[in-house]
View 1 (tube, helix red, strand yellow):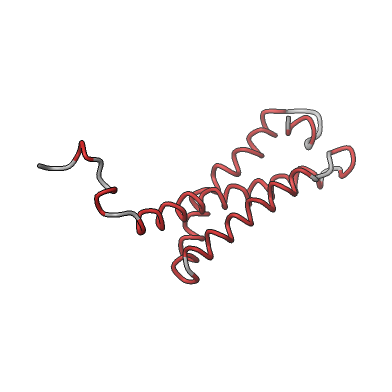
View 2 (cartoon, helix red, strand yellow):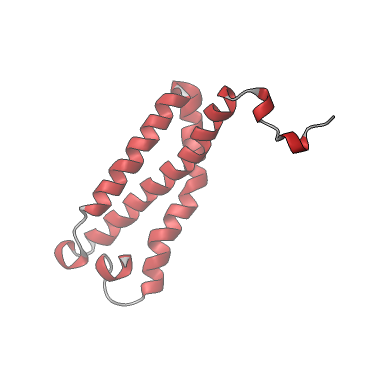
Amino acid sequence: MFSQIFFPAGNPTAALIATFGVAYVARPFGAIVFGYLGDRIGRKNTLVLTLVLMGAATFLIGVLPDFRTAGYLAPVLLVVLRLMLGLSAGAETAGASAPTMEKSPPSAAVPSSLRLP
């Protein structure tokens, strides 16, 4: 759907790779950058920041003008917003698992079927 709305007519595969590929590649970088921030400003603050970043990017994609209205600015903005989504998705994965493991009891870390007798 992105290729029909936000990109000029032509190669829909390139549009698909540009929108989804950039978000997928950005995930590890989001984990690295926001992991560093989590160590500096706190994991909870960083998690809230990544949730706001993801919500803002999602909202802005929803109100983004199409190619007929904005021209070549539409695909550029879409790729930038998908980059923001990828960064925040990678950050949320790493940022949410660390506090979960820190707050859980030690017995919850290993399933009972894998514990040594």
